[in-house]
Image 1 (tube, protein in one colour):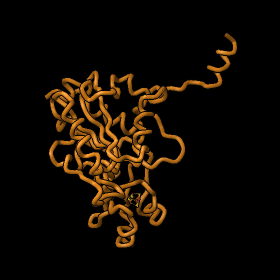
Image 2 (cartoon, protein in one colour):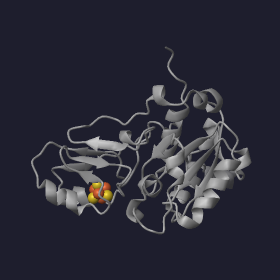
Image 3 (cartoon, helix red, strand yellow):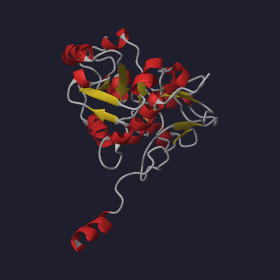
Length: 252
Ligand code: SF4
């Protein structure tokens, strides 16, 4: 018994008591802040490997950003990344961070479909499809369910079959080879169902955007309920995004 107690003392508390307020240790790039400082805008825009930075006004599209940090390294007075991991949005437009903006990214409950909080507020089962993913986002999504992040405490879990799922989580840029399996999986999920894009590759194609090896036509057919940026997605970003999506709508 003493050896068990020793192990418990050694390991400490493994779970994160509050995943909505915990601070991320170490290096982590979350929501960027773009200052109003004068700079070489052309140089800034052209250094981004995925075309995530635009000018007039200067903005960063988190759906394209691979969080490489090059812009911050080259233009530290202009770009800085905070550790704010709550960067998921219910709309594509919500992923655009503009010059001078330093406010949290929030999921507007009024824009979330009524059936999502009505049916999935206390239990949400998800089927994950890696559509040519590189296993980085998939790895982090697995971590969301581990003892540290414990997504299951909110009734949110990944399930083995689309027939048991309420929605689909897509990772990867969606290759031609994965277009049909993705469609089959989506069709097998009973209504009502939700679609979540997890990671830069899924949201925009990332560094593979425009490749002839991709077939992203699936995304043109359906409404996307949640965009979760990251390269890869952080478990805290994923969990907080889901909590924002299934939150009860304010009355009125
Ligand atoms: S951190 Fe994002 S915005 Fe900055 S250069 Fe890299 S991909 Fe572009």
